[in-house]
Image (tube, rainbow, N blue to C red; front, side, top):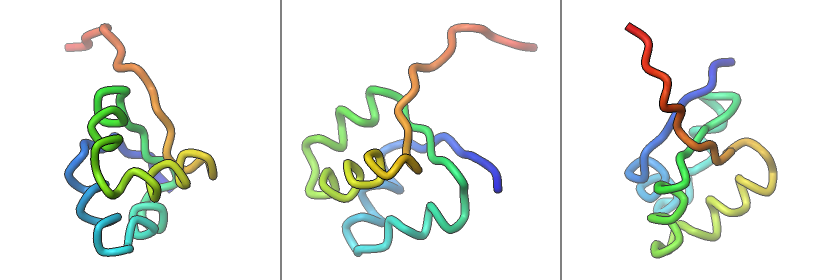
Length: 69
């Protein structure tokens, strides 16, 4: 299964309807930048996202500054 980088929108929307697990069914790993994690901290979705992080299928990773053309 592929991995994907996510922004805040899908995490908040899916966690808000109790369906964050759908992302895990579609993708092996969901990578979020630290800024996305910080945004989610202020949302009701925080508990679900934190659970997914502790389970290991959402991971936080700093973006690379390397550009490829």
